Image (tube, rainbow, N blue to C red; front, side):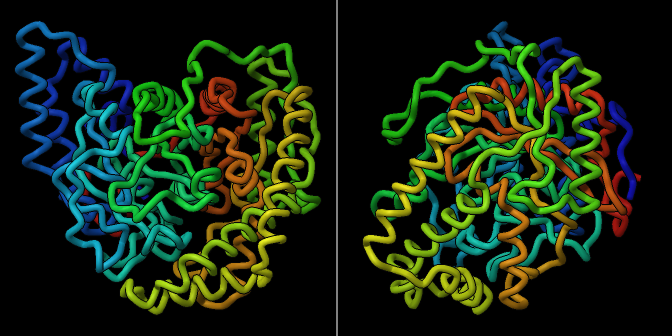
Length: 480
């Protein structure tokens, strides 16, 4: 692998650096966009992360921004910063296919709420990115665009479903990517590709899907969040601040303040190395040990403890999604031109919890409330939790459909990832370097609407950890 030297080229710079350089007129918006378009041309053929390049539109937006700056107009916080957009997020002028053949020409007449706010802050959409079919699998592949490659090793999965954005950011095709997270779809690919992300509190970032027939299922309403992927934690903070405005299309949006509650270092940060009683494997143990050392060096008090009912909560998330999938989705899949791979995944997924009774469904949501109450009490003592993301090594491509055990193993390794979705909690994934040649990360989790706590702690971990992105894949000569 070839890691770009920081500052050597525009495509290697962070979103914060690019915004600063444009604000100070060191570089133009057009130069920044052109550099990233060139990088896409060089790198994307090797990794297949970008499905549509928005070159003409991006150049036009950059030239318009440069003209406004020349007239003395104040730049937005993300003026001239390119970003990619996952294939299930509405963007005016390009399709929102969700990796599905039947939606390949589905062009929304409106932007998704957070895309509208990012554009208002001056950010420029530069490309659409690949995702898993119907954004359901934890491996990025679909019959419309094919598989996306992990930039560190093609024998590894890039994760999913926001795998295209994670790979695009990791390889310098854009400093920011917009994805979303229903059961780890931001944090899993970010961990597997060695980049950072935040899954905000459910309701923090307004969300809406133009092509969704009716309102989302209840699990989507409670577990799902839109969020950014970046190479640095400060970039996550910058993007999140731009994304969080009110939009009437999302009645669940909450006007919670952001950026006003810094983490009090006198209060302890708790580290949970072996969630659910699962002994830490070498990958998890190495990342958690380094994270604890970073926080101690930063002056935090670090204690070891475990939040309640992890195994029970992780199983509950799968149970509720499986029940809704089997009841509402499975009966209509015959008209959706789904691939054999996705059909097999849905079958494996739905077998885990065969009880479809209304009593079981209602009881599941009651249990969710019980678990949430116990976690709230836990956060009263420990305001921030540092825990593993995915437990164990990065799997290979199609690990989730080769056999049922592969999917079950992924579920077991995702316990702490699932808990943040189940309870709608904010969670930052921070890269911690490598173990045995594979990217490793930790999660920083806090109570609802305490993104500032997560970002503060994550930034202190990152400041004491070597960064390795953007990367040029070994099997291409781009950027040499």
